[in-house]
Amino acid sequence: MNTSPLLKSGIEPRFFPATAAREDVEHETDLIQVVFQGAADLFAALSCPTRLRMVCALSQADHTVRDLARASQCSQANVSGHLRLLRRANIVRCERSGNYVLYHLNNTLANSLCGMVCGQAVQDPMPG
Image (tube, rainbow, N blue to C red; front, side, top):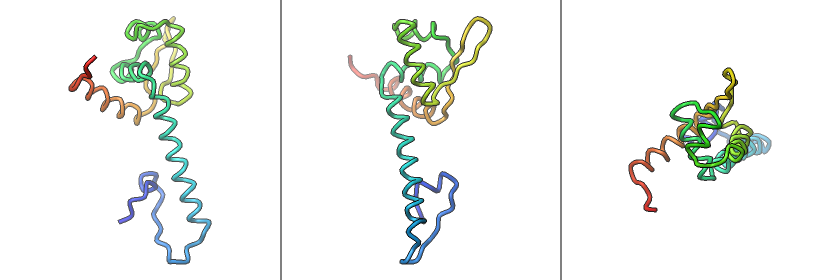
């Protein structure tokens, strides 16, 4: 059974003879590189504890900058900067609701990762 990461991408696996077409192999290698780069970008955006805390909070409910600033004990300007980075990484999105801007999680993978991390943190809190 082929365990290529491309199986999850919906690309059908191909079984090539020993003289496989070089361009097909290079194409698969390029696609794998794109998948790895996307994962690295996601992890980079989540690498800051403050951003990770914000994403975990957003996995529970939508929040405003003010809500997130209070919860993270950061300034609203600092929170806005973190949210800008998370928006550029397509992890969160925002929506105007009256006088407020609500932030939502926009990435199911980030939501799943945060669920695992936040759940583990609650079960096994780190000494501090």
